[in-house]
Length: 313
Ligand SMILES: [Fe+2]
Ligand SMILES: [Fe+2]
Image (cartoon, rainbow, N blue to C red; front, side, top):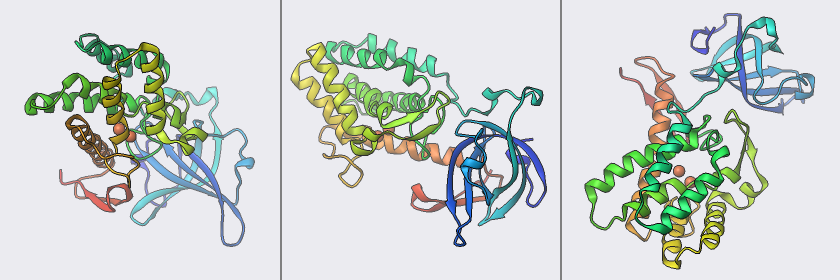
């Protein structure tokens, strides 16, 4: 059974992976467990009343479990009331890989394509520093998501986000041409979120357990600049090249309110900021649309200024 097949008020048994787990207390002081589950394609929230996480010691983030549930529609969205749950056994014949939401393009293929493109750079500084950071971080890049929840929160999601920006960025650079150093621009695209490898702590399924302490205290922009700085020092990159690339990293959120200490002040940075925002928004639309039926509205999307997305096809 899949999430899409669940029906309001119908008792069902379903296998799902735990993507988020936390606990809370009702106003009567009784504990409950909150979940987000995935079947590998769709996600759904769930709640288990009168239980604490310690009551289900075998179940944690990333566990694939069997759930007995009565799905309920709440505020237009189906949620699961979990009645019973247990971890899977061999007899269930369930394959864990089927539950992992993963990049539609193989992370290793993206990684190799980026590395090959960079190997053809004429600018030695960008070639050396991007290659080093890609190679030094290969293991994590192959499974890291781009975020905990908002966009590209899937296995290999960070590389997939970079890839979409790289493809659309290459087209834009070709159209606009004047004032754009394509190699600097591509380097910025590849490195702009590299600090996320230290900001988030993700397991190999691309599920983020939490932000790291460094992530909470420094954030991925500062962490990315530190990684770039260290690599540039080691490689003896000319100061001007290092500076403009750092500028792209620190300005990629566009404004102070969004966490960037400087607004974009070079054309490549301006274009990258727009592209970054565009890709995150498009992903959220696509992810939401894939869970809607024709003629249906989504719930309010907090990260998209609270709009409801409509599926017209
Ligand atoms: Fe970012
Ligand atoms: Fe980004």
